Image (cartoon, rainbow, N blue to C red):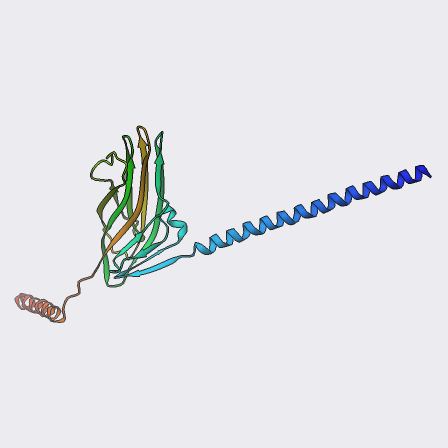
Length: 252
């Protein structure tokens, strides 16, 4: 009897152990499933948020998605509808020791309306910085415009006109601006790319620099079309010249 009871007790304990492990396995599987479902929802949300956006300006339109704008964030058009601008909130570099740099890029497709041509783009950037005890901070920008038909391109390298090395405890504003001429092309579609870098390199204390504005002034101008009267005079002049030339030719 004692042997039988001992066997029954052992079997019962083994059953409880297996059952407990099975329940733990099921629980872990449910947790893993929830994690994968959460990751799937995050991926879906990211894919949804990266949908292309199109903005319509005077003589042009701009198309991009948030996956192409990095730390610059979401863009908008000015009230005059001639400038695409971004107002980043997290684009900064800060250090209280070795040099620190932060870089980001943005890219968009610029489509010029029929009857217009692209003359150039004016890039304007602004921000602020602080240097407690010396050193420097810096910012650099490279703007490129590529014609999608011929792949002809122009590039602008932009930097502040003066060194950003003013020491103090207060925030100091900085700004820079430059004009990039359009590629020599009759293209109506262009790829525009901006690569920016911020650098904080204090000798001691804290060095901080931030970018809070990047604007692209799109210089889209109507293509000149001759007035009807001027076109009529031009055709009449060409016809008169042709008639006079034929009169001067000797008869065969």
